[in-house]
Length: 246
Image 1 (spheres, rainbow, N blue to C red):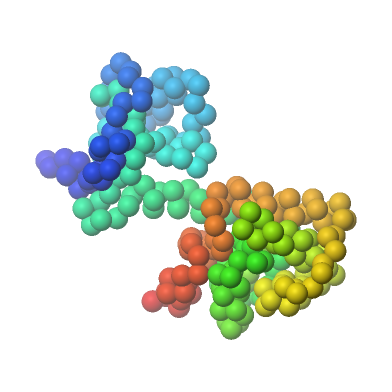
Image 2 (tube, helix red, strand yellow):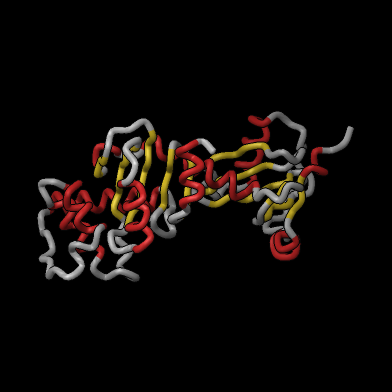
């Protein structure tokens, strides 16, 4: 029977830079049951906080998840490596897997703390910096649709947008947060000398919003989850494909 190994390739970069043993261990039996394998693998890496151990499409290769990182372990050779697995169809299997793991986290988000906009059949989770130009473009795009339920979490990136924190506090301090959010994302606050809100409850709420971004390992804004599918940035083609089923 043709091995499953033939359906996958490892990128040249991964081979050159990553397929290097990080830990050299005595060989284990790769054909053992998944639960037994997990116990064996955890015993071999006692200092690592491994969140999940899963089999992969390659016989004998295991996926180890450490928070937001993925590494691979091959018991037969005792080799552990970081890198990306690619299919022969040129799909980045590691990136797809990371996106799936990230998406799984959204079920535990504090939706009651978010700014809720709309009441449509499609669910959109947005991680937004109020001064991010691409966040403003996606907001304008979403405003044109009436079929969305949006949950907005503020994630000011002050290294790039120094006024984003003050605007985020202003939004959360407002009696009508949705209206204040609209004002901020439409540029209505850009030329106003805002006084930072010092309400401790609001500060704590913004910290919760930021924590959501960290929990989802957000690297840039906007970060979107549309009906469970992750979209990075203002990718309107992909957004439309998800919402309209094209």
